[in-house]
Length: 173
Image (cartoon, rainbow, N blue to C red; front, side, top):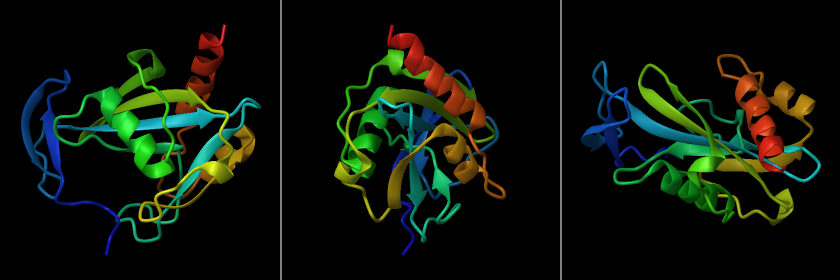
């Protein structure tokens, strides 16, 4: 069985992030309709970035390396609440999430993506990964992370990772 939850409900948004409706994930979106996705890069004190390797039965990009954490917001969730839930579900990581952690909102063909940046002192071995979604997680130096993220047909998130690290450095002062 695929790890994706096709029965969950999403809020549907317009381009201005205003909710215009609600439907199940399995239902097609019409032109001008978007669902909300949250993603994050999480760094340790050494500037290494956490990556996750997707489960082998994911519908899209099975077994590919991905950003630290991410997923779709479910109906009724704010951007911050969705990010908090995804970190808790996928990694067992409880980090307070504020609007200031969000460094980028990007609109794509059928989704609007909110990018976050966090720092943690938790080693990867202490994270409680959700095996139905992920195979494993590990910290990598940023150059190695970029090599892992460059996979055929997949967005390597080069700009997002660089912006996330810059966001961490800017807010550390």
